[in-house]
Image 1: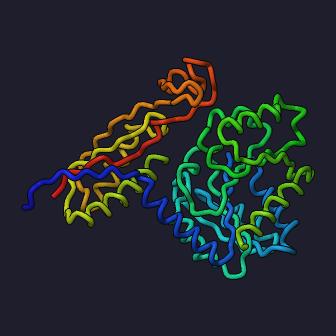
Image 2: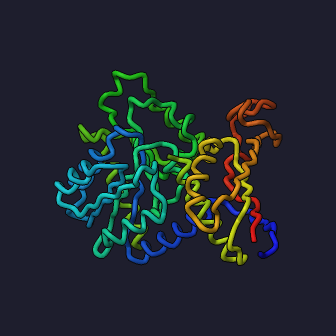
Image 3: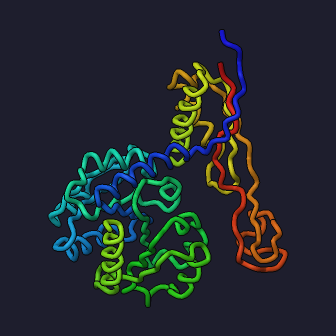
Length: 222
Length: 114
């Protein structure tokens, strides 16, 4: 029997995931596929926002979608009905996707002829923020009924986001939701994050969101 | 299960460490766990037992969890303070221009193996 040794490691548990994520991101850039990791609470309107986005942009951009859920394929069927390629990822009880799972999804989906791919992450504001999926950028949707204090309660989610969509603005008059306070709370956590108020239902603000996406895809493919 | 995902990534990292150091079995793992990671140590230990025993390298391995206290530094007055007690606003100068210094670590400190 070999002698017992003590080995100093000092290695972050996220290190291997971060490496895999960087590799995936580099490959996606080479293929010219902009992958957006879309995160939010359950019920914030991720799938409805995606449906509207596909309708608006599918004539100019080649779009594909990966839906991640703990179970079921309800969302995938909604997206497939819009006429784009879509696959369902099941996380098997896990509350988030990591870079390894995202790669499996990308390999299954195929990215030939894809300008813009969406990864609809598991509805959760905690764990998805900790694991780099290898996406080109991170977006989150916060809906008005959830409240303007969420950046204070879930700081990491807001720190990793490039864009925050504030959805369901059409119902804002019925809630104690202050958009300026939200902007200030987001800025305290992340000065770079762009905040775009929208309503996927009425279409309010959606043009700003589409323009943000167009710019990102152009820059990624340049 | 947040903790289970963390444990799977720990096992990936430990598998690499084992291969790099020619270890065939690991008996003890020491993990530095930040106070504001949101990871619950007792859940982490349960997940560890379940998942580690399913690998040859880590079968029966003990997991020691060491808490790293959360510390925030104030960018205006330069002083540090306990994050849990005072949150985002500096208790010395009342500025909210502050940054977390420690507390989000999930880091394998050392392993004992043969």
